[in-house]
Length: 348
Image (cartoon, rainbow, N blue to C red; front, side, top):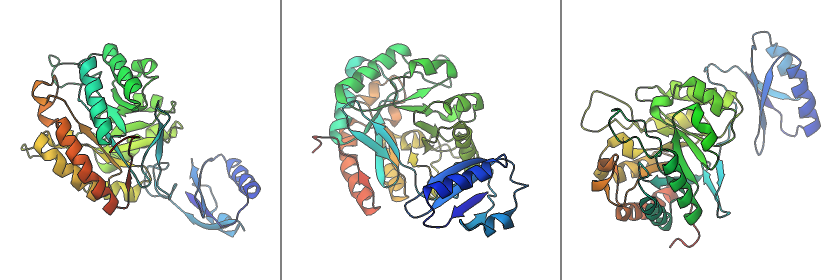
């Protein structure tokens, strides 16, 4: 249930009204916008007297939420959420609410030389975040599984040298203890419905990049976000990375329609992964442009200094030169969409 408050309600009046609702056994999610405050009533609202609420002098309107997700619902939080991430260089990066966040880096961290070289290059081109896999969920148990904690140390070294906040994927709850230096924790498509992991991530306060499952609906993605948010962590970035269909030309089928759908239903920022969606490096720039044009709040791109020699997913990784060229185009696309693209200090 949603309760929209009248404009001009004082802080003390709001506090007393929330206390009144909490005495009815409800949990209250308060969203204070520039012009209006909206209260989301979480719990068993079947016994709530809507007419009595409407009659209250502080209430403008009351709505019942039909969707099963509550905290992720735009009705609960009408204004777009922006995720703020401080970098080790003191700069603040943003994703959402008019800020286009670009996350770039190799599929896997392979060596110190490789990750630092890629980090320095993508930063120079204008990326705001560095991605790099260290724990790799692979279809085959015989494929390269990542460098593990050693790879994480190398990723942290690149963070220190470049000042870029880092994004890497978590495989299980037991890894949380080594993720202290990670700025954004990625939940991969295979773990989107790992509810035990999602609940645990709800207890931390790091931003979570939540990827859509291989065959998951938009509602299922939002319900996965709800699992995290129900634990108190509202810092979630939704990621469209393609879904499995009957077509085999591309690795997956990029569902660009999910971008406006998610942004209509939810206040959470939405980014797109055209690398995993297509599996083909030559398609990535076109799909990246299309994603921004469709309203995406950011991109996560696989970039490698030598894709042909990559230990993982080289066929879908673009080169350093291709990334730099793409960034110049994306800046113009972002401007058309009314978004600003973060520029690192010293970026030409």
